[in-house]
Image 1 (cartoon, one colour):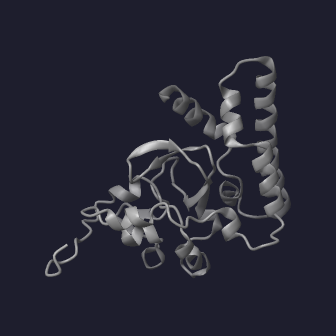
Image 2 (image 1 turned 60 degrees about the horizontal axis):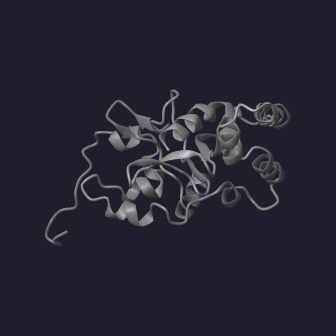
Amino acid sequence: MNPTEKPPLCSRCGECCRKGGPALHREDLPLLRTPGGPDLADLVTLRAGEPALDQVRGRLEPLETEIVKLRGRDGAWTCLFFQEEGAACAIYAARPLECRVLSCQDTRDLERVYARDRLTRRDILPPGHPLLELIAEHEQRCPVSGFARLLESDAPEDRQGRAAMLGWDREVRLLVAEKSGMDPAILDFLFGRPLEQLAPALTAARRRT
């Protein structure tokens, strides 16, 4: 940009917010401890193997590693904090890095940070947190890639494997919700989206390949 030019202004169309909340980066960690900023119940973990929209490339691709992002609302990906009236952000002062650097007219700043220093659950939860071990067991017993492979087969043993994985995924969520007293919304951060919810997206992604 010519130094004499003014920086591009946001037109407040809300299009970026409707496409999904941002992934969080290491620079965003303090926001989770900021009054008025997002808390853990406002987050969702997308796990390795899930199909996710690469907003820089503009295409759906399976994730190589997990990401944590602001969750959507109303069964869609529209950012939880997007306010339709006035196309405003409810946490503007504590908005994440991707939101701060995004310019619709020039996306180079977003592209530079997009895949850098993304936060994971282990980055966010303190060392020794009692749920870290359970999260690791859930990853081992209910991996997205393993579940996707089971969806490809109708063999009896694979149907049994799917049922067992779905059952364990469901039970661990119920157990944590009942025993911890935490907001059930936090389960999507702790364990990602339920496998039952992921199944249609995984099946559709397989058909596209």
